[in-house]
Amino acid sequence: MRKSSLLMSLTAAIAALIAAPSAGHHSSAMFDDQTELTLTGVVTRFDYLNPHSWLYMNVTQDDGTVTEWGFELSAPPLLRREGVSPNSWRPGDLVRVRTHPLKDGRPAGSLRGIVKSDGSRYRNAEGLEPPSTQ
Image (cartoon, rainbow, N blue to C red; front, side, top):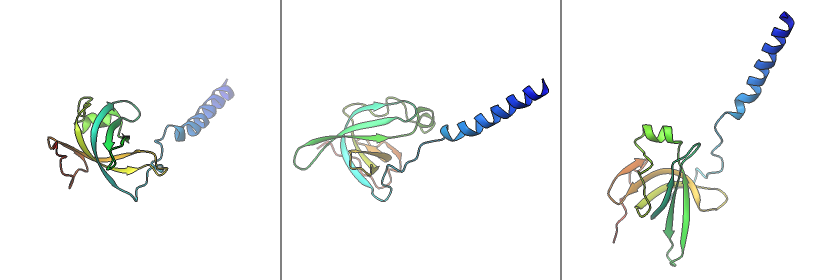
């Protein structure tokens, strides 16, 4: 009986050690932290979900083409503590975003800061001017 209990405890401890790394946060290695872009566009949607929320916006290029960009944010519990709700950014909002883009060139990045046309700011928005509706 004592051997069985010891074996079960040892098995549980090994399982916990193996599982711990898989519970950790993923790496941000996919983002180019040496490059910072500032983009202006119109919000298409804000997905307020775990494990990461995503903000999407249409960015119009100089040639008139429109590209939808996506920006990764924290999980809702962390966002809520920072004052972000599911309605913080709504479709049609004009925003300016600071981001570290994906290294592979796809139109997405980690959100570093954002300012809406009404002047409301989130995260590292210092120096970002609110986008003009004109």
